[in-house]
Length: 169
Image 1 (cartoon, helix red, strand yellow):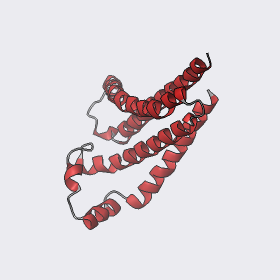
Image 2: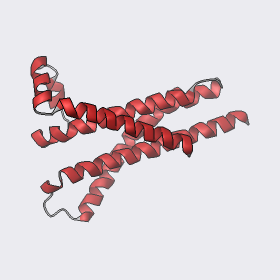
Image 3: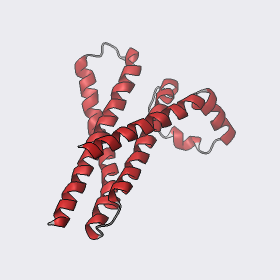
């Protein structure tokens, strides 16, 4: 019975993680739509809701991967080894994921403004460019010097909220 209770508790934590990342990605999507709402031509609320729905369906895959990684490295080993630090591992995995996706969101906003497109194959092609040109572009065109610290701070705040949610509920 102890193993079942341990599994149930870990499963609840994974479910909270799933709901948090689903909400976070939806929040990012709403912020992105709000930033670029001036580009919408007679976009009705129905179109925005449809966009959020389709985006939610796409984000479920990303959220599922994050939760799967957490389950494999935190939940499953604790079923075999009861002293396994599953809460710590889950916190590290989820916090790093929150910060990473927050930084990517902050990077996507100016990228979209310049290229009028989301991240695509051009990023892979850009890896073969001159490194100093990439850094110069990041600093001058993408405002790296203030966006990166802002993204990391927001990511840390979101990760702290995640920790608060997972520990309270």
